[in-house]
Image: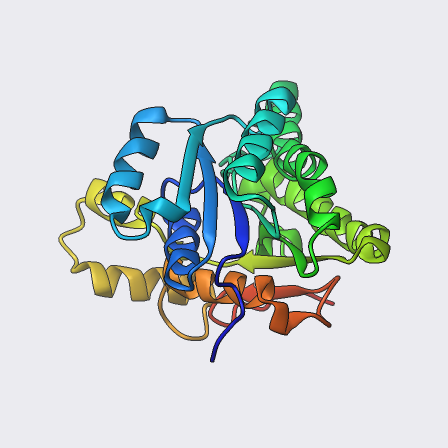
Length: 262
């Protein structure tokens, strides 16, 4: 199926690894122009070199999404390079393994700042360009923690819930400008952190068995961790003009984890 993304321009934050990189690769495969950023300039350069084919349709620059001026410059440069911005994927972020007794006031402030700035700064910069597109779409990468909080990730869970709420509000606020806003909520996705934890544990158990045990412990119905590519497919589908009547919703890519009461 032709997703209608050829020659469209999509901005992806945090595109140097994991889900962001998988999304960049999938968009390039669809023929889209992609602008992506990351905080680590060297890693971003290595990523661009690895992508190889399609690099004429790829624009990269170092940028911290918490820096509004830097984000504005990045988006402006992307629009000048490709002539438009049709989509935005807000992917930059991380998890903070802290419980109530461990989380400091700085942890709470930093986590909330990162999660909200990671959506609002790119959106503010891209909004005029998106409003000029005939197929504007924003996808906020979130986590099932937004609906199924974990006490060991208390700051991240709270921030994720706030961003899910924000995304719903944005979908209503921006609908009149023709901008769709949706969320993709992740479960356990194997982007390298889990294989590193497996190695650090030194259990001697094969990674596939260790992964299955982890999935069972976390209540993953499919019995395994997901992949970044599996997330990217959902993101790209929501960016597609074929999803033109989908806004204000969230898609869970989590293997069937369901502890939510709603």
